[in-house]
Length: 166
Image 1: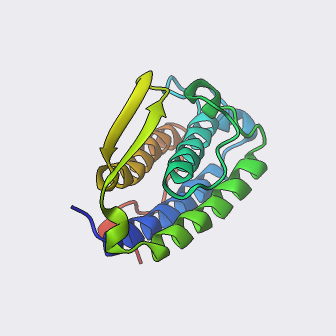
Image 2 (image 1 turned 45 degrees about the horizontal axis):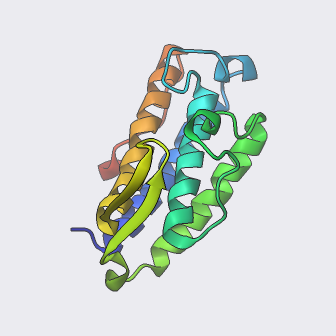
């Protein structure tokens, strides 16, 4: 279904997109970043926190990296109160994802992964390749929500198309 090259490309895209989104978020005041905009995780800041939390959770499952600070989805939007801390952790974790992606081999993509899903409230087993695809799809989905909120604040982001990635 997917290849190591795909994972590496999506990891590069993740880092590139996070750089652009955070550059755009730098233009907001802390009050604007934390304003409830009616999004699922309420604010730009909450959504950025959730994206990092989700990445940390999946990488914990895939590569035994440290678990995120929050044990659950409701707390995911509150992991880092400080934007500077959140931004620093995002950048550092993008390197963790890139290092993992560059180490993946085709054989690593075979088989299933089982885990307890807090969202589903039960044990779940899925093909590892589907879950890795979900990691990158989830990032894109929630960055789209941040992009929408930034647009509402009158902030223009850089290009977001994978085909335009340098």
